[in-house]
Figure 1: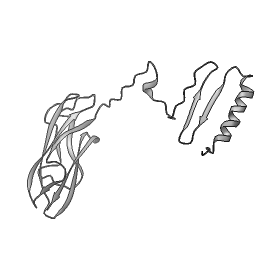
Figure 2: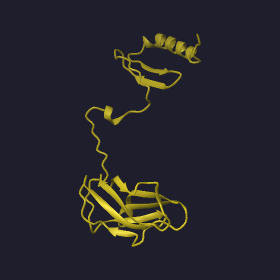
Figure 3: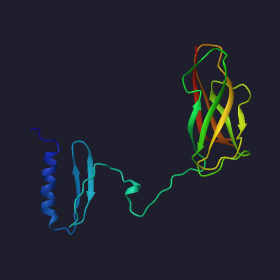
Figure 4: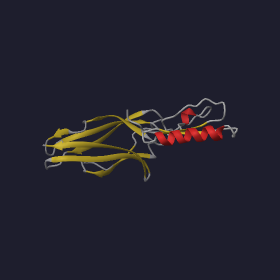
Length: 179
């Protein structure tokens, strides 16, 4: 049977608690194990409950609720063509991202744009476009960009995103392979 290297420390700790615990009205206990550190503070008469996690989760605090919604956020629902699509040299195609507004604010036609950010410049008719319609929170919209595959063989990534003025709040991309 293998004895843990912490065994002598645990024995000394128990002896100290036994000797001084009777004198103190309350006790603090810290336990050490081989795989994790767990600590619990207890008062006399309380049940000792060990925790393997050193973190306190907000969901564990009674009466506290936290809303983590950003004003401007999105998620990509679908895209066509899919990433890693194989294209011919100079192939013309329409890129479509369907995007959901996961933020709390409405995206407006005169305030929100979708635009090229970086990477391969596959777009052919502009690098920034107004939002075609207002999109309320939890609404979705299809965003289209006319694109053309490059002449040379290889893998290309084009990054696009949503912005209010110069403030980008969402990013999505396309990866294609020219054969």
